[in-house]
Image 1: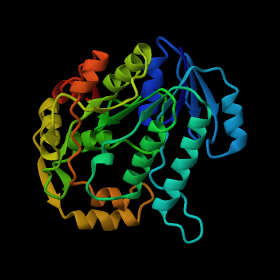
Image 2: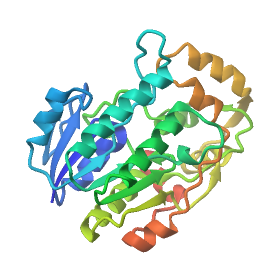
Image 3: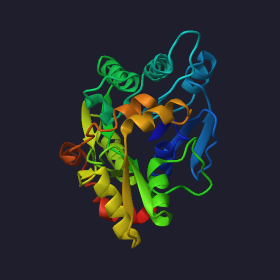
Image 4: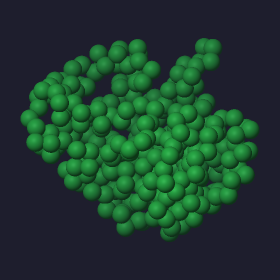
Length: 292
């Protein structure tokens, strides 16, 4: 199969391309960070620009795996960064739907948040547009995807799990936002990729799936699991969420809206995905070894 992968230079996108290229022809779209992987054909393209959309449409592909997403956009005039991200994600989905091919959309568990944020709103809107498109589709909502860094690949920002592992391995104290009792269900990116490929091989079922690992863990338990596997003992320093929100307002690498909603649980029962694909996501205690 010939696949078009958007957001291929992102952390999740690059890992997916690496796994998918073992069996399929991959056209990998990147915006600013080049991607260099064996068996992958990179194409620099901005799906918000019609000239580039026409160039991509001329490629030979059977389906689209849409991983690209803006969390914080570049504001224009009085527009907020959240509104800018909505506009830019909407333009990218316009392009993806215009290709007229089956689509696998890598969404997010944020669609279930009680707190409304522009990012969650954008994901919900994208999902609904895909459902209404008339194209064959599947939606996967990963919870806390993780995997080791790829050699010779530098995504636009450092992955949070890589930062967390580095802290656990080297620092006596690990700072934690809030009480650390919010839950995640971390999924290894190789398991996430395998599930996408199985859905493509079986025929897209026009269904949305939660994509989580085998364990639902609090953030404190995630830190403890990493420390245990690394043979370390660390202390956790719980700091007020409001402090991190203020810090995020000063940094282009963090979205204060996402920090403010961090204590939302992001659980993703993988049973329906396993039934559809045969993929059994690994336990975090097993998968974390790949990070170490």
